[in-house]
Length: 602
Ligand SMILES: Nc1ncnc2c1ncn2[C@@H]1O[C@H](COP(=O)(O)OP(=O)(O)O)[C@@H](O)[C@H]1O
Ligand SMILES: [Mg+2]
Image (cartoon, rainbow, N blue to C red):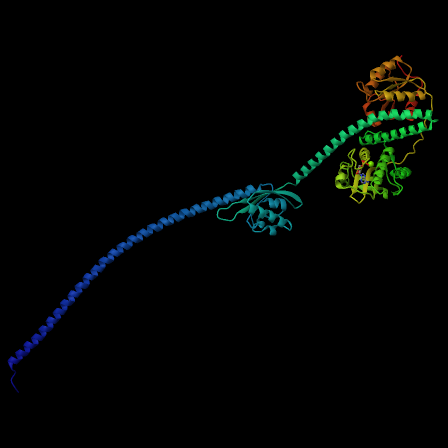
């Protein structure tokens, strides 16, 4: 064993110290580096912190700004919502007001879409048609109304929607008449709609129709009246002329019996005169001024008695068929006027058969006429419903078109070459006076049926007393007062045949003077009713003043009933229907003769 070497140990200690120093140095450097890194890290962390601070500040600002924005938006929204609620409330109020307003509309009010879907229907649908207005909303025309009404309404709706022009449209439904005012409602930003206001015009239309009917009737009545006055006036004048003609013929006949030619001429004059008197009778009948006695009579019996006359009045080729029912109620009328009715209808029927053959059927029957039937008939409007007797004259002749039918009752309307146009006018005048009605059925080529309806009366026939005409020889004077010299002269001649002396006066004043001058010798006065200046009524009053017992016979072409009305206080003793002949004159003066001594002022 060797001893430790000190140098080596030093060496080793030195190396060891170096080693440790190096380690220390390395560790110190490392620590330094670490410390440096650490401080860098720290610095970065601080930097990051600072940056974070900046970002946070920014963020906070932004959040603040956004919050402010949101708050503003919210406030705005709240205000908008309030506005909207207000607007909605206003809209509801306005709609309520509209509905309430429309519920007072006296008709139907509605709004529809362009495809006719109902948007609004007023309360009127309930009140007028029993339809629930709410239930109509959302339904189209086809779903609201039956056909063909729905199609008709749709057609109108679409036309107005496409044309854009408002229209008044007449409509008929539910058994009533309506007028719709339809119009287009423009809509901003949407298709147009259709508006409609519909009014029930049934009553208005009815009263308008009624007014028009009354107006027509009034016009017709006025025309009839003025024609009646005209016809009556003409007939009256002609009557005077005919009185003179026929009476003179009667007077001359006996004197010319020995001269056959003269007798023949006279017969012609008489026939023409009678024909003219017949026309006068038609005119007077039309004017309702013909002499008239109302008595209960059996229409069938009257027709049967006319058969001979009727057959001889129509062509032999015509068949005349009678269907007269037995046991009919009586009617009230003037027999000669009813004969005139039958005659006129039968003659017309015969004349309607141009080739002269065909059938005329006269039927009588009893009917219960309803108000509706009477209203349809001519003259029937105001007649009461009930029992009537019908006289029908039917023919198989040419018939009439509607235009002719409207005019045939006008006086002087004729479609015949030699017609007078008075036959049916007379029928009308007579039937009117008897409170009857006329029905007419006719068509060109189909023949014609005239039916006269006369009210049935509750009466039985009295047997009329036989009236004989007493022959007498008159004595004393008869005063004839007439402004027509021919009538005076003729009456004078007849009077002298009866044994009277005749006094003639042209005027009332002259008559009174003559009456006074021949006081005590005037048996009777024949007084014309219509005279210029002082008329018959006034003359009678003056005569009565001179002699209250004067026997006065009024002569007139007017009906006795009409004449009597005019002498309400001091009626005359007798009445003579113009034209009158010997027989009527005799009858009128008989009572004056039987009365004995003539009256007259002392
Ligand atoms: N039975 C009938 N058939 C066809 N037309 C008739 C008939 N009765 C009357 N008429 C028509 O009525 C018109 C008037 O008749 P009416 O007053 O009797 O006058 P008239 O016979 O003189 O022509 C006739 O012209 C004729 O056109
Ligand atoms: Mg005729």
